[in-house]
Image 1 (cartoon, rainbow, N blue to C red):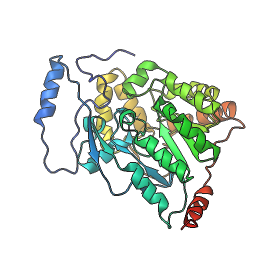
Image 2: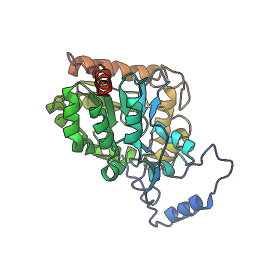
Image 3: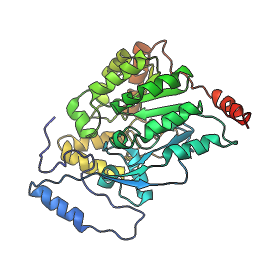
Length: 359
């Protein structure tokens, strides 16, 4: 892989430009133009991350999509400093009035009242326990968590109310909360999904510039497995021409680390992500940009995205079929006899009933 020209690649960020918000009628462009000028001149173009405190009225979201594997999610943060260039969640930043490009990874909304809102939800007489996933949209252990500890506060609420919780992350900061995870596991209330995208440090850095290294993620899986906490490895997204050739080895190393299962999806560049990713890859991997984009199109009927439920995350065509056949081989070879368990939904109602008897 040839190294990107430092004068054209914005280090430490995934998106390489500010992308306008499609819901805004007016937009201000001189700032972006000036930044491009500074890149050409080789000047420092670092973008300072802003943490913006917000106070929403609710935190638990019903997931209507039938093919994402969760019924409810909650996100203590909106936007994600990890800066993964392929992230589907970038589009949602537009609903908050920001752009899906650099805004998504540099303007992080901090939901200070997340734990209070969660507790209010779990206390409702009408609420019936079902696993709530932290986070279905942005990483709950992104760098902001080290300062604000909103995820830890929410885990305490889940433990208090004996309520099941799933966690999706690619950050080893999760191990800070191993004490709470162990307690939740005693009641069968927690499952963790660790994203592992590439074993190549340079590929990982380009795709996910502010994430934990792959070696730290594997150590995180090991620590969780040692504690008996069920771990599913997310080998996703599979990007043809970038990390697709690593699938067999990725499956082997996460299995060796103790993962009980793995999942994957073929990358799809929905909404604004198509333009963001295309702009990025022509800067980060110019020699293979056209090949990669054409292979992604080959998995989605000639487009960078397919929105059909049940097909959009799997892809179709010979290349996608090859990826899924390889995944089946991995499951038979490395995960035979392993199973990721269902979480315990029976304790929460007992807890609420016990509380009501006190009054």
